[in-house]
Amino acid sequence: MNENEDLTRSLGRELHGRVDGIHDAPIGLDQVKGAAGRIRRRRALTSGAAALAAVAIIVPAGLWGADMLPRGDESPPPATSTPSNVNPTDPPSSPETPEPPEFADEPIVINSDAPQGDDPRIAWVDAGVLHLPDGSTKILPKDYETLVRAGEEYVGIHGQSGGDDIRMDVLDADLNMVDSYDGYSAPVATADQTVAAWTDPAGTVWLRANSETREFAPIGRPASLRAIFGPDCASGGSQCRVYYDGNSDDLTPGAEGGAGAVGPQGPEQLPDGFINSGGISADGILVGLTSGSDHDPDVPTTSTLYDVVAGERIADLSDVRFAYAVWRPFSPDGRLVAGERLDPNLGSTPTGLQVFDVSSGQERVTIELGDDMPEGTTLQSGWWEDETHLLVMTVSPSDDGPGLYDLYRVGLDGTVERVGEAGYDNGTMNVPWRFVG
Image (cartoon, rainbow, N blue to C red; front, side, top):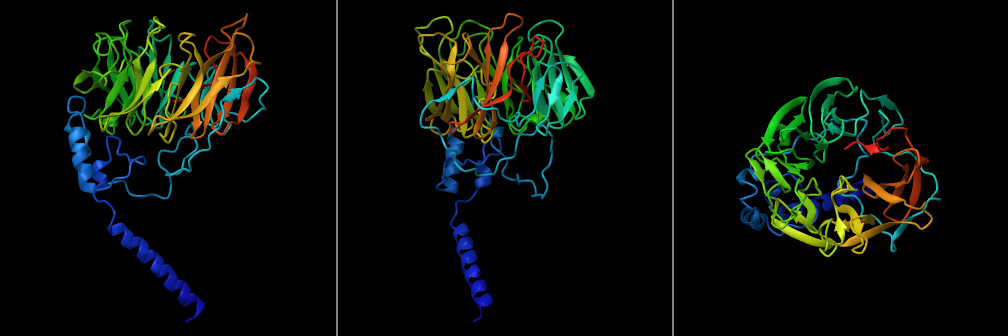
């Protein structure tokens, strides 16, 4: 036997071994993908039949109807050698199964003397200009307070949220105005940035996808949106849910005027015990406040991770909130979630950020501001740049404007870089580095 024949036989045995292993694998995975057509990386399925039975039992019928489960005859789209729907604002692509990130052993401290790094690797808006990851820029028709993607298009809000004369503009890929609507609050987008949602002054939710705008459902009052989730949101289907904030000081779960979700049939309550929603991942993991009050420091702050498809409570997280600083709290791969760390003795002002494992609620990283920061410096916001880096913005007092802003790239392994100009003031009343959601 020559060397080539020996190699061929070895490869053949290896391939046969792998194929034989496939026959013993669980069956029916396509039927238990969940609402987003997801693949659950977190939990191994021990039996296809058992998994189907479990899903049929635990999906809460009151919140999600039978249509929440995907149809058995659905099939994945054909593979293609080139990515579809490529847009210059897309963040760097991620592998299907990325290596677990390295986490710092100690709290990560942001100091003002951090070394200078590159510009953000995701798109952002500043003073009426859209900055793209490739370094190019485009002039926007207006200086939008919030800009999100809806496939190849953009949806932006202009005007103070909740005020008069709010406009929701739809722009094409070249930033030409396509449509303009009455708006009420900042738009939100699905995790894959293919569908955008907003509310009008009457509290009706509107959707934009595939270059079409459709009326989705009435909330019944003006409301600010937090997130949108569902595999059929592009068509306004029965599995789509849009999450909104409450406008009442009564933080009792289910209180009138409180936060909720809205589907095609109208408003629904959040899962049991939820006061608000801080965001939802592409896998259908909801995070939100389940205990806490900005007015009563004696009420402990607790947030909860909850699987809306399985109807399972994953973990309760103490002294952390997900409602303000980190607008899209889940990492791009959905494995981590970042929230605002609170000190019970300091009220509602965040003292830093905390990053948790989504599948277990285990704390992975704490991010703090260093003692060398200018007096009065506070945490402004955080945004995931990729699976292992957060862009963290701080603001310090200014005599001439709303504040001086600094942006830092914080790696989960403990690395910190300054991004952009130090003590930046863009000359407008709008915050700089407003990342495209």
